[in-house]
Image 1 (cartoon, helix red, strand yellow):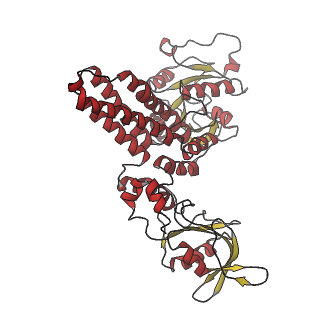
Image 2 (tube, helix red, strand yellow):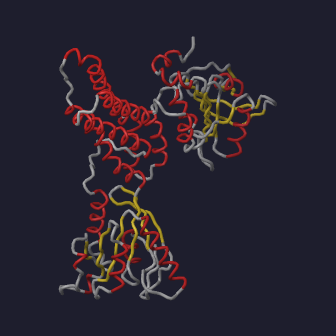
Image 3 (cartoon, helix red, strand yellow):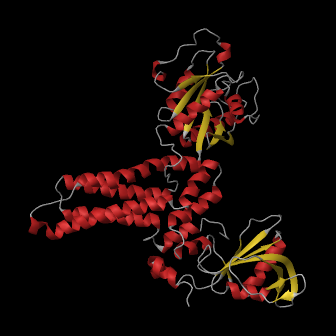
Length: 480
C-alpha cells in the first residue's frame, strides 16, 4: 500500500501541484559545524530505510543481530562502510516511517559523535548509496509540500532558528502551532461565504427583485480581523528584527557615557576631551524583551579635521536608518547653534531629547529651551549619577510600542511576505465595501473578494509559485 495515499486525500493541493517533486531520497548534516557530543545526519525519502539497513549494523550485548525496523525506536549500533566493512563510528539511529515524520516521508536520523571528519565520512557513504545532498531548507520544504505544515508554519521554523530573544521565539512558536494559519483560514471561510452570497445575488437578484447583502458584516467579520493582523504586523517585525537606536549630539555631551550606562559595560571610550568618538560604535542589548542595536556616533559640529568630517558624514547616514534617535544635550550649558542645527537634521525622525548632566544643574531652572522643542518627547537625566536611566528605558519602550497591541496571546505577523499578503487582502475587501456602498456592479465586488481569497491563499502557500517557494526555502540552512 502506498504510505502517502491518505496524505494525498487530506492535502490534495500540494500533491496535485508538486507530486513530481518528492521522488528521490535526500540527506544532510543537520547540526552546525564544530566539536560537540552529538552530530545528526538526516535522511528523507523512499529509500531511507533500505539504505540505512545497508550501512547500519545493530549491536546487542551478545552478538550482532538483523536490523528489523520499527518506527520511532532508537537503535544502537555501528555505521559500516559497505565497500570495505570499515567501522566508522558507534551511533544511535531513529527511524520514522511515513507519514509520521517531519517530512511525511520515511526519515532516518543518525546520531553520531560530532566532529566534521566523522559526519562528512558518514554522509559520503550515504551519498554513495544513490542519495543526493539536500538543498537548503529542503526537509522543511517537503514537510510543506506533503501537507504536514502550511507556509506560515514553514516560515516560522526559520524564525525559531533565528530568534535572538524570548519574545521573538514566542511569536515563532505560536505560528508553528498554527495560530496564524487558523486565523487566516477562518477569515477565508468568511470571505468565501460572502462571495457565495454575492454570486447568488448576481444570478438571482433580478428574479427576486431584492438584495439581501449586508456590507456591515463584511466589515465586522472580514475587514476588522484583517486590519488587526495588519496592525500587529509592525509590532511583530519589531520583536523579530529589533530596532536601531542612534545616539546623536554635539561633542562632549555624554553620548558615550550614556551608551555605557544603557549597556551596563564600558563599551565606548570616555574622556573629558571633545571629539573622542570619531567613528560609530554599535552594540546590541534588550529593553523589555526587544532587541536594540544601539549606536554611538561622532559628535556633529563644525570641523576642519578630515577624520572628524568623515565621522560626521557617517553619523548622518546612521540617523537616516535609525528607528529612534536619542538626541543628547548638555543641560548645564546654553542650547547652542550646533544643537539647533542637529535638531533641524532630526525634524522628520522619531526622537527623544535627552538632557544630560542634570546633577550639575541642581534645583536651578535649566537653560532656555527653544519653542520648537517643547512638543518633543524629552527627559532630564544624569549619566554620571545613574539618575533617570530606567525612566529613559521606559520612555524608549513607549516610543517603540506607541499604541501597539502587547497582549501575549495576540497573533503577531512577523514575516514581511505574510504581511504583504494580508495587506493586499485587506485592501481588496476595503475596495469591495466602498464599491458596494457606491452602488458599483456586483461583478466588480465579486472580483475584489476573489482577490482577497487569492492573497490569503498566497499567505498560506496554497497558490504560491515554485519560484517564490524556492526563494523562501533557500533562506534556510542545509539540514533543516
